[in-house]
Image (tube, rainbow, N blue to C red; front, top):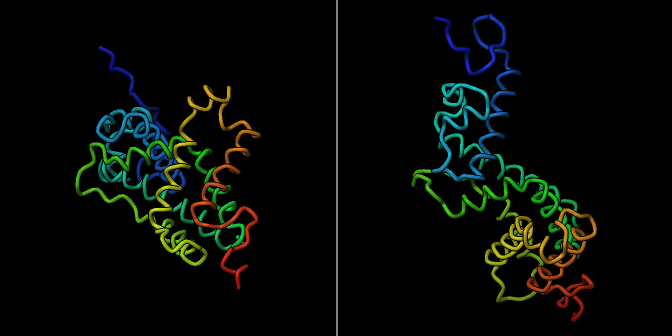
Length: 225
């Protein structure tokens, strides 16, 4: 009786270790496919078998690269954290104090909008749905970078930069994920260039108001001196 065909294509008949470049491509593919599944179904609703099938690899390949489903999930969250940290660091280095809100909103909104799947996964991650208590979910150092920048330039003593950042991140995430609301209210998605620009201006004005910086960009404290 003929044997059933293997599920995944074989890459030649040579034995031994695969080249490093091929292993890296496999790892990247697993990260991307798992990210999509985790964002759609959550941690608990995504199985290793589903990830392997979507990535077209065997389950032991995932275990080789990441150790476990939790290890894979943590690797995805860490990568997202590092990419946002690098973006924020670069933006703060280039931005002048009086344009901080606009630059940060512009950079983060465009980045989040281009990575809606990751933002959805991040939202699920915040809820901690089905995650083991031992899960390690990144350092989120980019929040501390921004908090320090706001602390240097904020005008309202009662404004806690940590709470402000949580508020700003929540607004950005909501606008990025609210595709249905945009279509209902505006008749088009926020990815449309004019609506995107309008949304970013609105968010920058709101954040400026929360920080206490007037629309003109000059600090009241400096004007009073």
